[in-house]
Image (cartoon, rainbow, N blue to C red; front, top):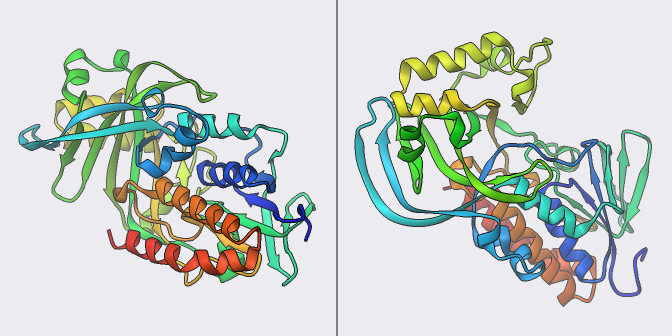
Length: 368
């Protein structure tokens, strides 16, 4: 074994929330852990909100001593509104907490540190030799480990190489954005505060909820923003025009604000003005950095190989309506760490015991 006498040497592919959660957990267990992230810089500035599920924040609250109240904000009700007319369709008391991607990622990265967080490493191949697992990167580096944990997201290269599975388009995209209080009228700000708001449309919907103010490097500071999503049904044949940036490059997953062509941005804002009532339209128009992401489905028949594990969206990719993608990834991570401890670092035994329950959980998420 490459690692210590009892615990394995681990390579984690993907350095986002899932990858950092499993990396921190396995290092706590005594494993030697390195993380390999394809981005050349820390993953800040995603500008996305996350509904807080217990699994999402468990590492930060239990191991890092960070109270959930320090990294999230709450709301007291769930509202259903006609997004086209602003007519109230009902509301119920509902206590939820919400955070931002930057807040969770920033805390996890600071906990793990940068010494063994390797950026600019794009995976091109992965293999299980029966004795070890081997990852090969675009720069020519080969990494050999007792266990490779693949946490490389919904467009996982690991999944494609190991199983030949690529995601299938789900038939719609989601526009996302955030607004500060200064970016919208006071009445609009008040309209969406303290609530998870569903804006219902004939063939789609929007969601809006508050999130904490977070710096680019992941520090929560006083203040709140409003996070929103707007779902568009779109034929697959129309994806090319929507996902093409100002330089003519087609993006397979997300097209971020700085790359949006003027015509695409005008189409987006024009639809908001035509289809949405004043508070919803103003919320959409107030976002200075809107971006669009296509929604895709993926499922796997197995998550474990002899020395490789797929976790989170790299295994099952649930749709955003489940509000549980990051939480599911963290659940995969906690369970894997528990099984490695229970088997005293025996990778094959741990993976065999871990896989059945996590497969069941992943399948259940896809049915939501």
